[in-house]
Image (cartoon, rainbow, N blue to C red; front, top):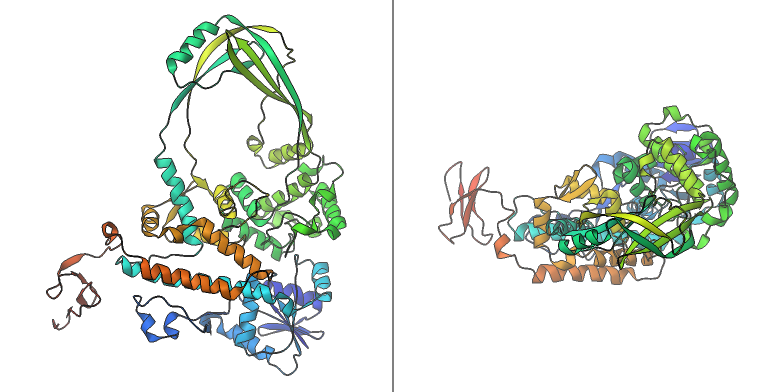
Length: 630
């Protein structure tokens, strides 16, 4: 008998149907030589600090750095854990199949249950990018030995333990250091991400708007513009010189340019576009994708690849054929260039996000609007990514008027290529205004030609940086280690992973460190103050991105997990041993009312539910309310 363990019940049901395990039992399905059961996400997690030593009940005792890690079963899902434990160790089960989600976190979820249950039976690994019946069947026909993913498990352990060490120790340390009445929650990825928001807000608030001017010449059928001037008098003098005079064309530069189609979506790119077009949060997009995946309409959501493998050519071509039949915006699409989206070297655990062939029979009327919109985006992107290049003629005209240089620019489409599909799509979703706007085309202009012109002054102001939206914050997180937030080809040493970035943003907002204002994300006073007291190395996006990159290397067997954990431990020790409170911020997070002065040591006295006590932890002064005794 083979025991299959899925990450959640919906996946288990999909596997059971394909495998023929149709007999429903309490907590599992059985039949045809298989038992199919499930977790509810994490059933086993790290133990609390006091499990290592009772002294860690007091937050002042840091750092907490276990020499041997302890785990415990989560009480709210203990019953399902007990079912899995009994099944794993049942005499009829000879092989266990890890069918948790195909990624770092799925590997961790399964291994913790396997280790905690004391199971030592051989493990096989199911690795899927789709829950379609054919994909599930093929996956079970090509199971790998569980040990093949040992490095991925090491990476997952390091991520889990590093997050625990940083979050647990830094939250306790800074909460005590600043006498905060509420925990100052700090995280390995959360705090650098908050720093990005705080720094952007600081740039905006410190920005000084500057006025500048240009001179615009109206040439009849087109207009041209001068360079910028900061001196109003100089700009006005040029208006007087050029008005009602003539401008001669000194140069016409024409160049044919080509724009390649966009790449397919990975999770982060899709979250960015959904935020830009629909205003969806990253979490909303991820949840919609998960529902679509569970309903077998899209491939695996938590992917960081934007390409398909080369053996998927026929699959992609078939899905495009279905899209063209099912979606109105797709009817004008030409023969696809499938090779443009194929690259084995750029696919690791999972290929890019695309719809599945199941959209052929899906009842779109039964799909909620959010999910439908995400499905539309995936369908449109598969079409545009395999379409022809957009080709246009770029024209630059330089004119001379009274010895001053003016410039006019224009674009003329030669072949709309993928932009034609884009235009149809934006009309289809009623977002025509979001289509890429190009400079208008210029009339036919030849060198040496002269135009009678009128001149006018145009006043402008420099613009401050824009607040982060989830679109631009996700880009900043993804490329935090590259130095260029918008460079697709840069090595991505990002903050978090595609699977975790949405939850990081939600955590920052839920803890009151940032807030949404329309599409914008801005830091609160609480968030700004938290970053003020943080050591620079805790806030550094680049350093945290380097840690994330090391986790990736560990998963590939190219970095040492023991060395990584030592570096994390040393990092925590250095902060707890060398950091002192900023005197001006010492009581900034203390919302308690000061009752008086301690008669023993002169420190502040505060009131609790049962007594009055001294803030000085080394002072033993307390006054009980019930009996008024010290």
